[in-house]
Image (cartoon, rainbow, N blue to C red; front, top):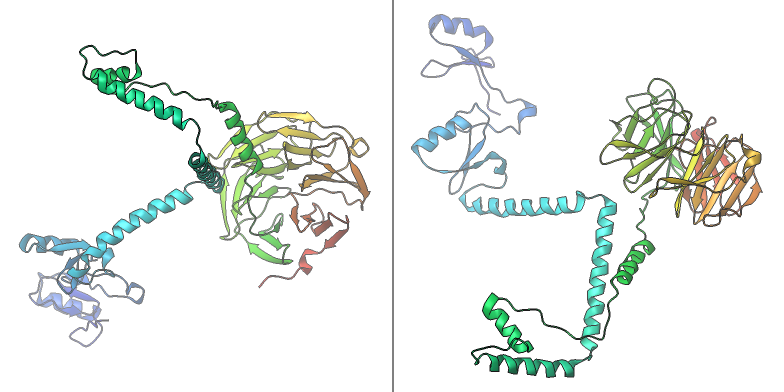
Length: 494
């Protein structure tokens, strides 16, 4: 770094602007200089600090920030806006933006700008093509392309082995060609024959007419459409989880605990806010947490919590309440029930808008929901019935009242491999998701089962944190054994 010294030997921090030879001055020498040069002025000297070592300074005036590079055969000179203008008037030259300083060291490198600019444009387009769509949309497009690719391959194979009516078509073709040649020599073209009709259409209108094609094959468009629809439904696109985590937002504090049930370790996060009591949450497909509701003044707030970056983004409020349950499907978040009545809402993650759904058939104050093959299964406290919500029709179906003895009990439901599980009092009920009228049961400890978020399934075990007493529970779905772990005893991940 260049050292600027005053005539007195001290570090210079100012300079004059009117003298023929610009003098560097320290603070103590300014008054003496102005006494000798009363028409002069003093300005601070631009000193390069350590944190400014990457700053580009004009190579001509050595003061102003450089915005351009003047390119010569074997070198470049950084220029500020003013110096570039002065040079341009007197000496036409090649100038490029200063951002290319690490790429261009002389005129031989100019072509690299055009190469890289073109590649940048293509790379941006490719990134936009891939990441401007949500993951599900990309998966649907990939499935569509695979269907088209395989359809073309199969059709090509059939066409290559097809003999069909080749001989008959060859005879028709010879006749039409002969008629075209003959009719072209006649004054009045006969349009009653195919060759004449085709020729006259081209003479009069410049385009060929439609010719009939005899075929013994019928194509059923409806059947093809139904077959394709079945394909999409059969190979339903599902999100592949990158990890299996249970979360705990400590109410009234800034703590968030993230438990990795695969490694059985935990990680603690501190946020710049306290979490609402009795709120519910749900891990979204992108790994963020949808957090809403609770008790108190902020019970209508909706938050997207980015755990990795420790950030919280407020979203449009919903009808504030607690005891509700959350589920994500196709870019929408469904929120049912709670302590404010038979409320049901749907939130669009893209539009940041809430939509009121058909009211629940009855008030379910602590509701528990899970997705099944034909909708959303739900039940809860003060409710002896189970209901299935149809997302497409926005309607509910009463699936029976086999929980009558447990009407006043909290309930927690979840689904795994087409089996619905319902923990209720001292019973664990389970049934096939397509036969809701046939239930089996086993006895379990009565622990007032309910959770603020849905259980996480890993290796045929359900993991969840029960409300009120906040410990981690593990339910083996094969043996129905229950295991409780104190969260602070789970080792912290490195």
